[in-house]
Structure formats: structure tokens, C-alpha cells
Image 1 (spheres, rainbow, N blue to C red):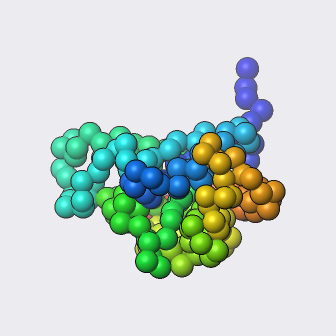
Image 2 (image 1 turned 135 degrees about the vertical axis):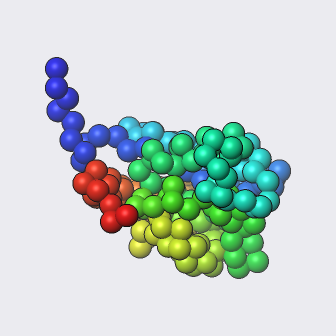
Image 3 (image 1 turned 30 degrees about the vertical axis):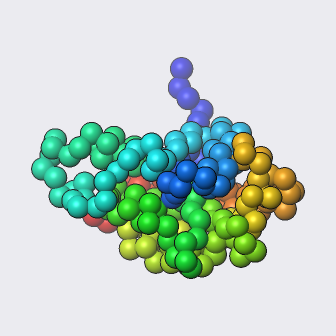
Length: 201
């Protein structure tokens, strides 16, 4: 029997990249919130947690290894990144900038990100919600070939905004996330459709 699903109705596959390896990190709450929201809408969500994947400090990018010689962890991530439809970046703000674990995680790859959108979920313990890190991330994500969508999902005072399971304690966060995801999904579907038709290179 033929499927009635089109590229517009098929579930999306999204990699959720978390940018903290601190043992007392609060960003895992934001990652859990995002994962739950993606799955609730019927999409595949794959968490990439630098605390689990344990990438070394960048020495050689994935593309700099001869075929078949890259470390297993890089090969697995490359395979994942090539099949997903987009990336959601969950990042705190360290000294007005990108956390080193996030930058290290991102910089190991390049072509694997191409022609896919990214969306920024930023957070902080203070009132600004990590937006200064988001500004820096936009330049990095564009250079990597996965430009961020115009909107972002900022979470101020994350310790009070989300519980340990990533459940929002403020309806405002839920509304912001829903609108952000609607925009992100639009971009992800549009770029998936175009990838199926071919890319410039």
C-alpha cells in the first residue's frame, strides 16, 4: 500500500545539541523540555550531549580523517547529522559568549550541517536568557552552513523557569517555545524539500 505521507506531513528528525559539561548544569532541563516538545509533536529527537559523547578538544575535524579512519564517536555523529532535518542548539551564556563545550562540539563538523536550519534555545541564570551567547552563535552557525532561524527561545532565570525534568513552570515559556518550534519546523520542511530536489554543490 502506498503511503499518503508527503514531505510536508512526514515526521522530522532533529538533533538537539546541548552545550554544557558542568556537573551542576541547568541546561539539561532546557534540553529535556525541547526533546519532550519535539516528541509530543510526533518528531524524532536525538540528544547530543557532550558529557556523554566525550569529544576531545578539537585537533582534527571529521573531514580531515581519511575515509574509514575517523574515531567511532565522530563517525556516529557524522552519520546522525547527515540524516537529520535540522539542529536545535541548547546553549547557556558564559561571559557573554558561547560555552566552550558547545563550540568544541560544533567545530568538529562542517559539510554534515549544510542545507539544514538551526534554532537557538538559550538560557541563563539571570534575566537576559542567554541572548548574548545567541548573538555569537548566529555568526558561527551561519559559517557552518546551518543558519539559525530568525526567532530564538530564550529562557531567563532557568532555575526557576523549568523543573529538573524540563517542565516549564511559567506558561510564557511554553508559548514562546511553541511559536519558536512552529517557525523552526517551517524552515526544516522547506529545506528538506529543497534537499530532495538537489543542492547547489
